[in-house]
Length: 174
Image (cartoon, rainbow, N blue to C red; front, side, top):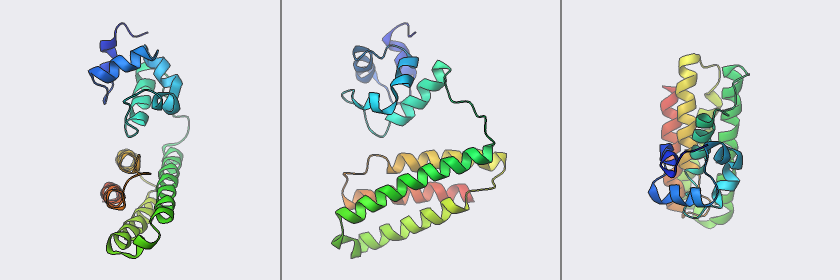
C-alpha cells in the first residue's frame, strides 16, 4: 500500500498533477495500478498514451508482481519481437488506409522504406546472446514507445516515429 501520494512519483512519467489524479481515481498502490493495466490507466484524465505501458510495467516491478521469466531468454525475445512487429504492422496498415493517395508522395515512400527496414531488422533479432538480448530488449522497448500513440497523427509525425523506431532497432543489430 502506498503511504502517500508522494510514493506514486517514484514512477517515471508521473508528476505532481498526475500523481494526484491517480490517487483520486483510486490508484493508491502500485499493485492497484498494475492490476488495472493499460486499459484502466487510460481512463485517468491527463494520462499520456505513450507512458501508460511504461507506468504499468514499473508498477508491477515495484509491487513485486512483475511477470516471472520462466521461459528461455531467446523465447522471450521472440515473443517481444513478435509483439513489436504486430504493433508496427498494425500502425502501417492503418496509415496506408488513412493516407492512401499521399503514400505515393516523397514522405509516403520514405515511410514505406523505413517500414521495410524495421521489419527486416526485427526478423534478424533472434539467436542473440545474453548481452545482445538485453540490448535488443531495450531497443524493442524504445521502438515500441516511438510508434505508440501515432494512430491519429499526421503522415509527417508517423514518418518521424517510424524513422526513430528504425534507428533504435538498427542500433541493436550493431
